[in-house]
Image (cartoon, rainbow, N blue to C red; front, side):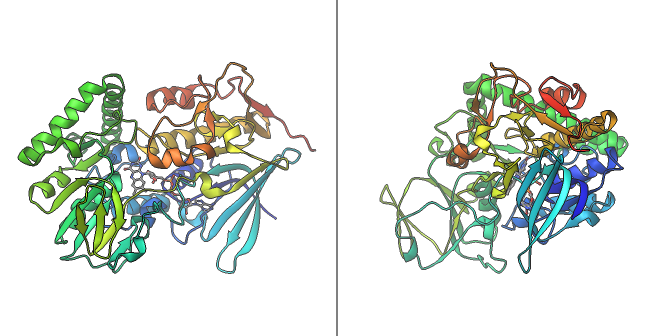
Length: 485
Ligand SMILES: Cc1cc2nc3c(=O)[nH]c(=O)nc-3n(C[C@H](O)[C@H](O)[C@H](O)COP(=O)(O)OP(=O)(O)OC[C@H]3O[C@@H](n4cnc5c(N)ncnc54)[C@H](O)[C@@H]3O)c2cc1C
């Protein structure tokens, strides 16, 4: 059976980043990337809806080791996909990807100190087995097969077209059409102004509002730094500036929610002027209980001011032949209804982990440094922050994996396993978000503790010291030499 030192699962933003870290920091390690789809890029290849873009700045969503060189800081999906592809080519990790390999199961044997990884290779659906010493899952956080669509009465009666953003039809012609987008999250807020450019009218129908904040698509300071300084220095400064600004606003939102709410409402009021209606922009929860929605250069508000977009806050009574009947009695007629109702959160796309013949039950585990599980050896995963750019955390996680591997080599260890040896560590939900997609999946998720290294900080500066500088021998990580000779 083929054996490599490390198997990375997933060739998205974090899988490619993880592979580059390995190349740079563990150049002697052999590795492959197993990717279930036929292309790299993950999220940024899958999502093809109009206007798809990041809602984080690319100085923090980009890799620490490879500067973002476009003028736009909130970037379009295709530009992010190119950045991932170019990084993979530049670091030569594109050649290590095995496409159409969907990993179904990984089994750890303590006796051999190895994982046996089983992947379904398509076409033909043959099972392939590989062996590795360390398994690094970069599989994202949602179900790739389909997004979330609630069950609405009468949906089959609608005579127009229903589209989910996760499965956008390439040939969808919406020019001159009446569109209703159901949803109020990042996807809806992105789609609505983008579709309004060609549609007759777009209505965003939301059950409850989100906090919406406008930010410039281009970061003037970052672009100026790029003109004056070497690429890498300018990038590092822009990255740190955005980390600190982001951390400041997050902590303001959590500590002084009323001040933050007032600031957000003022921003929207200034944009919409006489068209402002607080009902559509006053969420029933505190800022950052759910993810904030960022709009580049106020594009949503401009489209509302021009009359091309309207927002309705109401509940669906039923679908009709012509569109929707709402609980208030209002009717929304539509040619196309877009269900921007979210993702299905599914860690590791449902693949099974087994340790010494015992299946790992995620809710029975605690997360270690937000990237490993208690009692699961030689294993790590890349899951980013909920309150900042994904890559900030995944870069730290990949760097930490490399530190662990190098430390094990130096000391002749065959395995490393986070162990809870503190009886007072607590047991709390892993995410303190009340978004629908998180609440629906909470029972499937691991848990976190109340103190480090079992606490999820959701804070780059704190994680930086914990993951880049603190010793890997921290009392919780159990290193073992090989059992079998
Ligand atoms: C529309 C959209 C916009 C977003 N915008 C932002 C943003 O602005 N800022 C931000 O921080 N985050 C954003 N996110 C979150 C986003 O998913 C991350 O930023 C990032 O792209 C995740 O990268 P990833 O590589 O970890 O996961 P993914 O991009 O999901 O890639 C995972 C890869 O793993 C593969 N895979 C999964 N399971 C298996 C398996 N069992 N076997 C083999 N291969 C497998 C998948 O096919 C995929 O290629 C956004 C998400 C969406 C959906």
